[in-house]
Every structure is written in structure tokens, then in C-alpha cells.
Amino acid sequence: MVSRIASFVLALSLALGAAHAQESTRRLIVTVVTRNDTGNVFCAIWRGREGFPMQRGRAVEHVRDSTIVGGRAHCVFENLEPGEYAIAAFHDENANDDLDTGLFGIPTEGTGASNDARGVMAPPPYDGAKFQLGTASVQRLTIHIGY
Image (tube, rainbow, N blue to C red; front, side, top):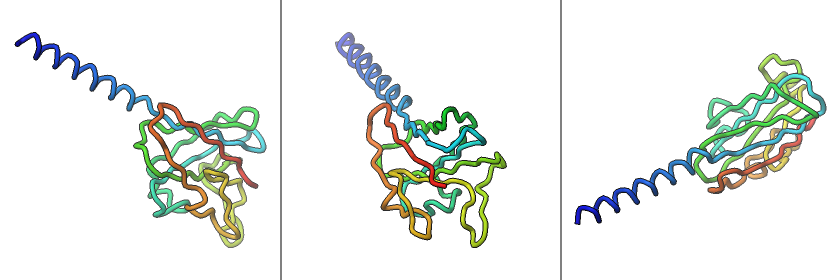
């Protein structure tokens, strides 16, 4: 009887360890396509429409990549729960850690969103940018920055 219990505990421990290892390696890799290799790329991810894309404080997570090579940067998000998300990104060409804007708050640096969603005289809508994050260990998206 003791060996059956020990075997069960060992099997359960291994199963839980495997589930934890799978969860800890889940990653979303976002390739951001820019017009040049100057500056940085910032990405933020929201779970739900509230605050998207203007209120960065409501984002689940922020990532900055200061390595742009060949017009490509990568924002990597780790251990997100499966579900619905949307991403907004911008190309901080002057590397001042801020999205620069001009008259009427219109960005003077490139911006983009998941699904390459674009707004008409406004930021991209959440419904155009939303996507489903599954349970795969790696999921990839590409965002093309518009200038």
C-alpha cells in the first residue's frame, strides 16, 4: 500500500512539475517591422479593451527592445494566461523613451498594433487589434509600424 501511495505521489509530482515547466516557458514573440534601425521599439499588451491603446498604465505588460536589426525588433512577453489580448507598439526613433506627438496629439513617430489594425483619424480600435493567445509554448505575431 505504501509503495502505491509513493508511486501516486511521484507521478503527481512529475505531472505538476511538467505542467509548471510548460507554463513557465509559454511565450509570445512579437516581431515589429520598422523603417530603419534607429532608436527603440516599445510594445504594450492589454487584456481587454479598457485603456487600449492610449492608457499604457492599464496594459498588462510593457516591453522595450533597443536592438533593431534589419528593420526588425522583437518584443517578448512571457507567461501570459491564454485569452484575448491586443498589442500596441511604437518606434521611438529618437530614443527619448516617449511617443512624440505633434499638433492635436498626432504621433510624429511610427505606431502599430496587432493584426496591423489601423484607426481612421484615431488610434486603432481594440476589435481590430484583438487576438487569441493560445496554450502553445510559443506564439508569434508581426506588427508593421505605420509612419
